[in-house]
Length: 159
Image 1 (tube, rainbow, N blue to C red):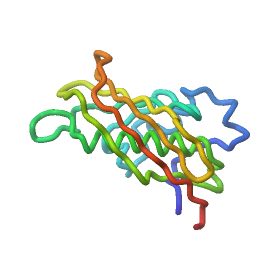
Image 2 (image 1 turned 180 degrees about the vertical axis):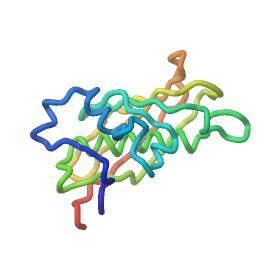
Image 3 (image 1 turned 90 degrees about the vertical axis):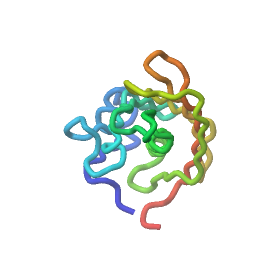
Image 4 (image 1 turned 60 degrees about the horizontal axis):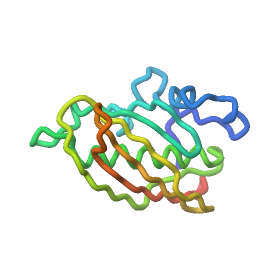
């Protein structure tokens, strides 16, 4: 498994020296528009803050709508899995391990038709081979729009 060439995850030694905002800037890519060629960039996901137990990002509704004009549930779930996977990576040695989503569910409780959503992912469980994240999406008024859970599997590089 090969990570994106522009992905600049810190080494475990460097992690503590970076602020949550500096980590987020690394994930937003060299141009600040996401990592080129990734789904996150295509969806317009922009990281705001990153820490080992909490990741925050935004995603625009524009360009991510379903035919009925509301934010597409699939885009919402992609945002949830992206945050859980990236958050899991922050708990691993990026030279030896990577995390991938293996289970994802979400409940959409409020439609959003404009603006952006902000997602906050919180680590609920950290084991040797699995991590479970709870992700809440909110609209620009701070109202909950979706509640998700994502389980990530830890994979050794080269496996």
